[in-house]
Length: 138
Image (cartoon, rainbow, N blue to C red; front, side, top):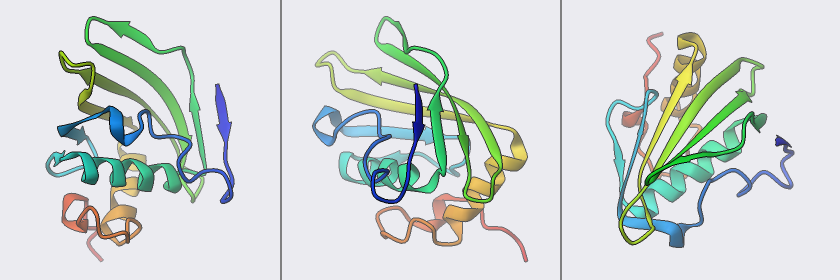
């Protein structure tokens, strides 16, 4: 389940769902965010930006499905080499579309690095404001 990526292949390899699987009002929550990101277009843009951020992403177990929720355990490496681990919970609505995504990352230092990188402009696509992320005090 390892996914080693380079600049040529990592653009859209991680996001867990194509845009047409996201509900119009999908909500994306994460420990790295000050508040939830809402809406199909914005959530998809964030997912692609996150995909492009990680130097390495590996799903460590097969997906676990319980009722309408899918649980994905993963490990990743930031561009600086910091290791992160996490669990992503994807919940589908009655139509089978993804209605909610919750990302839980650890440890705190890696989480703050990730959020600060986005807060300082990594997600320069403009789709998600830097105000959603931790602003490192200098």
